[in-house]
Image (cartoon, rainbow, N blue to C red; front, side):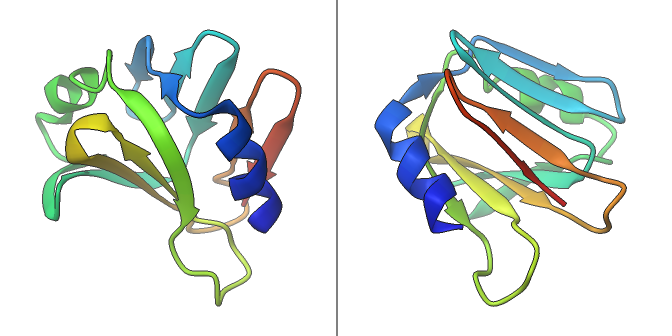
Length: 118
C-alpha cells in the first residue's frame, strides 16, 4: 500500500484529460497515465457526496472532473486486505473507489509502472 502512494507521489499531479463512464467501467486518463475500475465509486466535493456510480445523473458530474488534476492518492482503510484508493483532486474534489469483490478490480497505470487491486 505504501509503495502505491510513494510511487504516485513521484508522478503527481496528473491532469485528467478524459473521463469515460459506461455504467460498468470508469476510466480516467491523461498524458502517460490511466486509471480504470469496475468497482463501486462515489464523488465528493469537500466532505459532501455529490454522486455515486449508480445515481441517475452521475454522467454529468463525472464528466466535470475533466480538466482537474489528481494531487494525491490515499488508501481508504489501511487495516483491511483490499486497497480502496481515494483520489484527491484539485478544487477539493475526491473520487473514492470501493472494491466489493475479486471480480471488480482496478488498474492504475503510470508512465512506467502498473498497479492493480481487488
